[in-house]
Length: 293
Image (cartoon, rainbow, N blue to C red):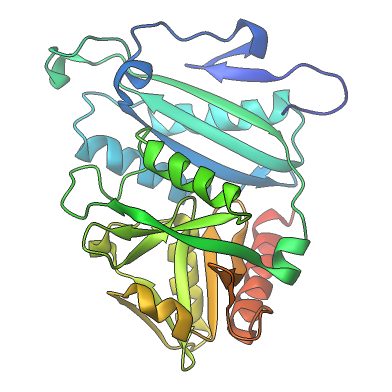
């Protein structure tokens, strides 16, 4: 996916703009060898990367927690992000920032890996309004999240569990997979955070249940409290999915979006519920404020 017209896609690789056909990473990059890296996915509207500070704060905090010896400066990363948007002429689209620990073999002490590598890609991507209007089908997938893992709660390149779950969902005609912890309770979606509405209360798995601390998840919690909507972060058992009046997901690309059925069974009456619709309106209002020039 690229920029406007017939122009080729341009990437930013460690601060330098390159054509996609010329973009390279060494075969000894630890992101490729070991999944030793992090990434952030942004929504871009009116040429502005949404929630820029929140995404970079999460990336940098995770890098420090996971013992990166050095992290590129925030101003450098912001400059690379804005340059990728400019070079590709992105008005409404996506952006991904990937950070690895750089080159190195298995036995090298982490504190010696002080030459990280990053790259940024950006392109146009229009959102389908039908996702908000009709919702999506989902399936309950295999237990995959381990709350005791040291990489739990970090957006790492170790993404195969989510890819397998997403593939299973697609083969069953669904658009999202709901992942459980090793104990069987709910954690998150393969590419989203998970929310239920039960007896008027918004409920989401607590961070101790191994979901990603999503940017849109945090926005939803803040916004629900601002709107005086009851909300709790708690442990949720799988059976509670079928007791909920509403189920919705959140991620940084879409914000909140409804789930209309799970494993072929309708959620509520099978249409987006009032709480989900209220949060979608609030998301759109917030995006408009962020991008107003």
